[in-house]
Amino acid sequence: MNNIKDISEKISCIDWQKVTEEMNEKGYAMVLRLLPGQYCEGLISNYENPDLYRKIVTMERHSFGLGEYKYFKYPLPDLINIVRKEIYSRLAPVANTWMKALNMARQFPNQFDEFQRLCHDNNQTKSTVLILKYGKGGHNTLHQDLYGDIFFPFQAVIFLNEPGHDYTGGEFVLTQQIPREQSKAIVLEPCKGDMLILTTNFRPVKGNKGYYRVQMKHGISEVHTGARHSLGIIFHDAVS
Image (cartoon, rainbow, N blue to C red; front, side, top):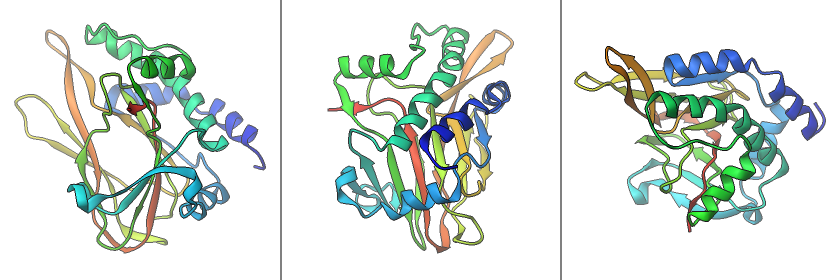
């Protein structure tokens, strides 16, 4: 795989029907080995390049956990830009189905550029794509990535290190809160290059009287050894 066009072709070959079914059933879906190793390593090697980022966040200063993440600035690197745009266009129809099921008025444009214009029209103009780094003891508390009134109901995470080799611990944790029930925890250990698509906020679940919202959050368990990096692709921009 030698260029960005190959990534675009790989995205088009994903079984999007299966992704849709898994999103509807669980609120998340895994795409295996989306990025080859050299792409993952390239993203990590550019972590220290200050020209790529608009903001650095030290997580413990804000009680977010222990670790660091950096927001990319616009224009995004070509690889990230094409993944963001092409994944969005496949997920927009699923998002609109969810909105309809929950009787929500919001409908999302089919193309990312139109959705981004909607964000910008609502003063959400800052890039939210980020790369995260955790060392020993690093973790991320349970949260939702909402940056303004306009938010897309899905986001993606691409995992850049190999668990068990580059680091131990650091599992991806999802929690699901069904009304009047105890929270359910889901623990995932994706491999290097895998992409996880997950709900940003809630998912629809069918009950006796139609669909209702089930809240979901996500975080990272404690890293025991090594270093763990991931790329977070959030489709809505942040308030300026």
